Length: 139
Image (cartoon, rainbow, N blue to C red; front, side):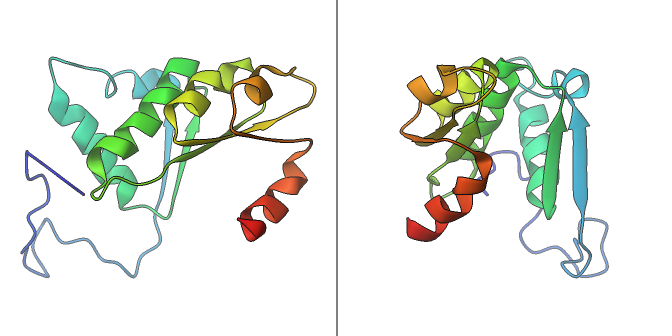
């Protein structure tokens, strides 16, 4: 990833404190209240990069109980720190996912119990989550 702060040196020693063992599977779980301390902090841009650095070294990342704004900021974070700039995909099924869908380059809305707001703001719309597999395999 691109870093102006150089959190992880590119040429760290294998046994040094900055070494990341690629053979270990890692997971990262963060709650919205904790995420608020890292995201959208103009006074501390290093915190966003630190969050991205930790998350990008994990096999899976789970953000629970996050606000709609935080969802959009997580997509923006990936667009900012990944070089070359990736194509981001956001999938949502309710009004709380609209900001995230709009921030991503590709948005998929799933119609269902939570209404049509996500579908109306998305690039692609599907009826159920189970149709995601066909969408991914086709495109």
